[in-house]
Length: 502
Image (tube, rainbow, N blue to C red; front, top):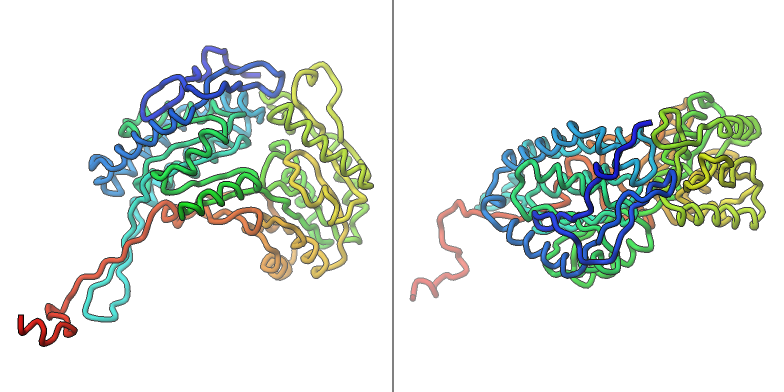
C-alpha cells in the first residue's frame, strides 16, 4: 500500500489572494478515515480573511492584464493547470485518499477527470462564438457574453478535486475571479490544487482557497455584495438556505443538491450487466455520491432471483483500506457520518425493513479505528418509508418490486428529488419511454455513474437548479449583453420638427 509522510501533505496554510498564509478562523482537523490518524490541523478562513480575499479578487479581475485577455489567451492558463494536475496525479490521489478515505484507484481517476475538465473548458473558451442575431430593423444586432466578476465555488467533501474543477475551470475560462471554499472534512485536496494553479503564473488574486465554517466563510461568500454568483454542491437544506440569502441580493446561483435516485431492472435485461452496474451504482465510493442508485426497483417476476444474487455478491465485496488495490468499499469520510448512516439503517429496521446483509461495522483489527460500514441491503420496505425518502449518502440499498412501466414510473417519481435514474432493459424504445417520463436530470440506460464533461449535469426539484458541464457550462459564469449599431444613418423620426426648429 502506498502512503505519504506527514511532511509531504499540504502544510495547512491557506491560499488567500495569491499568498500562502495561515488562516485566522476556527481550527480544522483533517483525519484519515481508514485509521483515525490526523493528516493536518489547520486554521480555517475567518470573515476577515474572506473579506481580504474578495477585495484582492475584485482588483485582479478588473485589471486589464486579466479582463483584457482574449479567450484563447485565458485558455492557456487552463491548459497549464490541466498539465499540472496530470503531472501530479499520484500525489493528488494520495492526498485525496487520506483526506476522504476513497480508494486510490478512484481518486486517481478523479484527478485525471479534473485535468480533462480544465482542458475541455480551455477548448470551449477558444471556440465559443458570439451571436449575430437576426436583423429586424435598421440596426446591426449582436449578443455578447462577459464575465460576471467574482464567483464563489462551494464544494463538497465526497469528490473534491473533480467538483472543484467543474466549478473553477469554467469560471476562470469565462474571465472571472474565483474563491473556492472546500468542505472542512476535506480541505487538503483544494489546497494542493492551489499549488498547481499558482505554478502556472495565473495573476495573483484571481484564485483563492478558503476552507472554513459554513456559518462564517460560507455565509460571507453568499452575502458579500461583490460576489456575483455562487455555485454550490452539497446538501439540500444548506442549498435552500443559500438560495434564500442569494435572493435578497438577486444573485444567480447554481445548486447541485441531494438525490434518492431510482434504478429499475426489467425482466428482459442482460442480468450480468445489470447486476454489475447496480452494485457499482450504490456501493462504489462507499455510497457517498449524490447520484447513488439507492432505490432499486425490480420487476416482480425476477425479484427473488435478483435479490438473492445481489445479496450473495454484496457479501463478497472487498471492504478494506483505501490504499489496497483490491478494496472495493473503503471507509466513510468521518466517524460522525458513519454514525449518521447507521442511524438511517436503524430507523429503517424500526419501520419494518428486513436486513439481508450489512447493517454493521465490519469486525477485525484492520477496521477498529476506521469509519467503515458494511454494504447493506434492505427489503420489505415501501416507497413511502423513510429509508426510501431520505438521502442516506452511504452504502445502503433499498430493494422494492414493481409490476410494469406505469408502476415503476409512478414509484420513481414519488420522491422529493430528481437527480438521476438508471434503466436496465434490452428494449431501447421502452428505455426511451420510461426515461422521458421519469423526473431526473440524468438518465442512464444499461450503465450507471458514467460521466462526460461535454454533457450537462444537474437536477430537478430538491436536487437543485442549473446545470454544470457542457459548452453551455461556460455561459453559466457569464452575463449576456445585447449590442445595437445603427445602419441607416438617419435621425430618428420621433424628434421631427422639434429638431428642425432647434
